[in-house]
Image 1 (cartoon, rainbow, N blue to C red):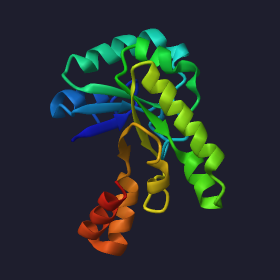
Image 2 (image 1 turned 90 degrees about the vertical axis):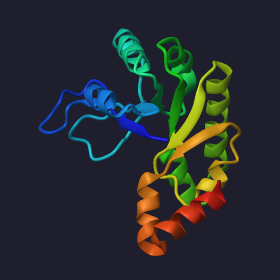
Image 3 (image 1 turned 90 degrees about the horizontal axis):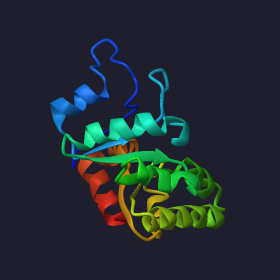
Image 4 (image 1 turned 180 degrees about the vertical axis):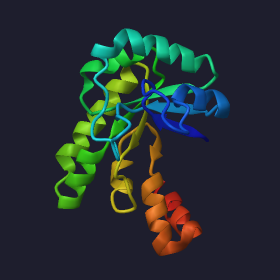
Length: 178
């Protein structure tokens, strides 16, 4: 399934036509809105929806009219999950860097429980739950003990592991985790 991630509010730049035009041209099954700026190398936070509520509502409607679903990249802070649903999102993608860091230290149970509670709140308000950022072969199995995770974004990790195991070997290892 094809998913495009990006900030729906960033203007076109150089050869990049902007996320909406890219979505119109490619018709992905899902777009994931990430609040990154054009000059950021990678994500460092999830959305705070309330300051962008009206603009997001209109933007999400425009993307959904193209036939795909919309996921909002969000921290495991549940205060705005109902608002995400209200502005039209179909899913959230939990920003999992905190879990990955805690897992690396070996002390991740409390952090995992926070993510599990966040996933439950999202599901209770009618949102599907995805997850992504720093999930890898070393931590994915533990993260997937959370009920109801629909998909994970592991593209960077898959490619990194493909350098060690080959692409087929890396994909096979991830499928084993799933």
